[in-house]
Image 1 (cartoon, rainbow, N blue to C red):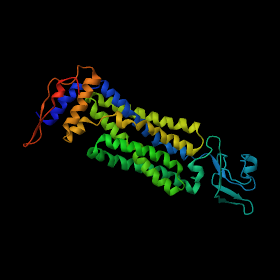
Image 2 (cartoon, rainbow, N blue to C red):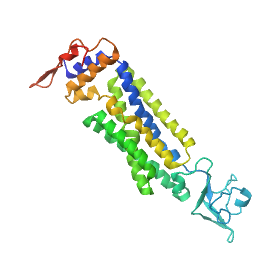
Image 3 (cartoon, one colour):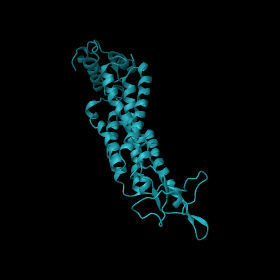
Image 4 (spheres, rainbow, N blue to C red):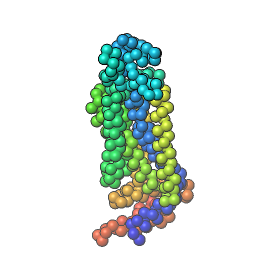
Length: 321
């Protein structure tokens, strides 16, 4: 019997989707939730509200005038009748010129990165670059963290990513300049939406039976979408971007206890030759969660090359690990 057949025979004792897999799956889903939350956090944190050029003759710095009759003397209008966001009228020369200061509508946002650093007009590229840096981080994480999880373990990479997700998600709120914000956004993308999500997804697919993997994968995507929707809820409730980003980042606290709550993938442990650890997890799943009468009644023999062989421990024949 091949090593793969040995493992499949063991995994069959815990079923396709028993109580143990359900418990682990629900814990893994929290990573999908935080990934969705972090993915679109910049939509609210760096939002650009309705804005117009600052008019010294009207705006005194403490109040905002939106009287169209008065403003149209200083700000040209678009074809639809709305005020231009980027131009001021030069009454002396009957021309227009770009402005370098803006007034923002504070109906929904009191402060955002877009307001702080003026992601408007000829500076719109700054906002686009911020989101691109985050997404480039997600891409980098997707390319690198999967292979790292193959080398160092799914659980290890999951937990490192969860801690860094919390650290980066909160520290990016206190970025003092645009360049630092870009750098933190890149690493935030690596660990915020890719880091914990990918190992969690793999842990689930390697734990459940083949017939349940499609449903679990769809559920992962659904929970990811819930995280995206929560972005809008907090964005509506919290008008200050520093507090808002802190709240987003602190959601990663739900992953910190996972080191003690989730198990490493038995399949990965088996592939690394750590058979005793793999068997121990499968035995725990069988005896403690499924209610199917405990561990396997017999254990297959596992060959490991011509020079050594390994027989699974006798404790598999009992209900105790």
